[in-house]
Image (cartoon, rainbow, N blue to C red; front, side):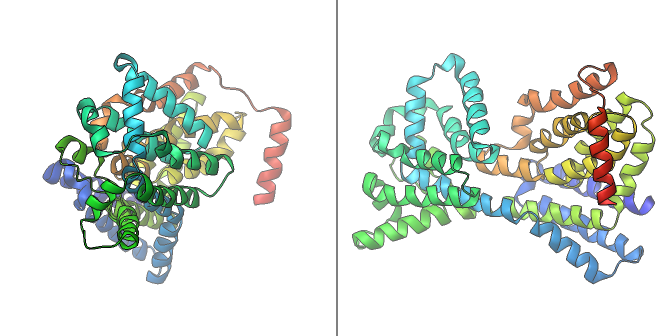
Length: 406
């Protein structure tokens, strides 16, 4: 137990020290160093318990490999933001949105639209990286008066957004869908925003073809830089590029390295086992799931670890006590899923902060749904509200699954 606890203590101490010294700029690099140092200490504890260096190294690599799909999506979203800005897609959404949406219900409308789009596309990351960026831009209405001078505002600029919706509805792989929409937007910009494209490239001696290729590559790689001459417009729409999310990817890799070593060495299971044993009642068992998932979001820095590990650890105990599987599923979702964006070094928190340009500390106080979900789930657990029991059919299926796994 001591070997399992010490890496967590080191992690908390290093993270606290980093935040105290660097403040909100901790995620720019210092926090990543703290996580990697914690991963190195966890590896030393694993060596002490008889694990070979090669085994621990392979576990860390496997942990990082599990996030490769998310990393590719991050890179594609970076390219998408840069290309959509250059193509006038985001400026057009901002222009139309500010003219249509009533400022008095702006936040409510934003929440509803993003919720609907998130349900349709099945991806909160895509929604935040596209509409989220546009809505953040709408919040600054100061640039609206001169927006038409910097970009050719037209419904044609919304074609990349429509293409992404089509890709999503047809169940195209997220990376290919996002990257395809980004490439289409960058090419479209060369026809619809030529003045902005030429100003962005900044090489009047280039021919049309060279200028276009330069703009397409640069907007997707390092992001679009608006050079309209208006400070408000240039600051709002000079964003994106794969390079803009490299710090976020660094954060994800560091967090997953620590989590992978902790799980491979059995430290996470050792920490969770006493929690299961000390939850004799239904309410305390559900509270234990919530606490474990939230704790893993902080310690492991990854939503999938916070969802999968408690689900595996508590499944047998829920079955033994006759609780339906959906009770465990809801407990995991109400804690592991929704609190992950609240942790700066978690994959979700790092993504939202990196894409939207707003630190987790800044949006944390307004995340009422995220903060209240685990509280309500625990209350429901103690009072027995919406806590169904295991049916005979479910019990038989679960026992069969357990026997197959065994």
